[in-house]
Amino acid sequence: QVQLVESGGGLVQPGGSLRLSCAASGSISHIFAMGWYRQAPGKQRELVAIMSSGGSTNHVDSVKDRFTISRDNAKNTLYLQMNGLKPEDTAVYYCNVQGRLGSLPFNAWGQGTLVTVSS
Image 1 (cartoon, rainbow, N blue to C red):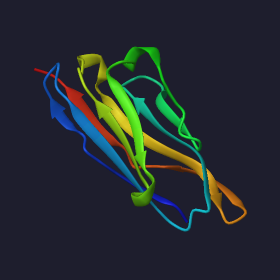
Image 2: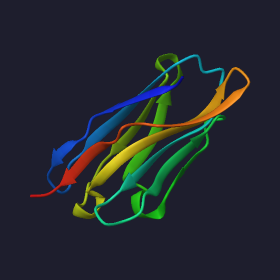
Image 3: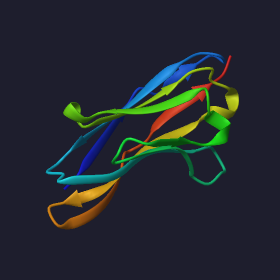
């Protein structure tokens, strides 16, 4: 079984920074992709950034040049560095990992961490 534990959310003023972390545990044999999603109040969950197994990344236009997805393979941890935060970035942020446990595929989600951008 794969568990994802997120941390790093909180209250920050506009223009501020936060770094989210997502630590994965479990006997993961292969990771296909890792990503960050967010869900603002009253809205659907949306993709923020994604990283493939090869390390290539893609960030949605609304966060390009402000957010950066990265990972530490040794720690099985995914990060999202968020700079220049705006009120519209306020949301619950979820990490997602898709991979294999042995021969079995999995699609795991973190519990979510709240990011509030407000003065």
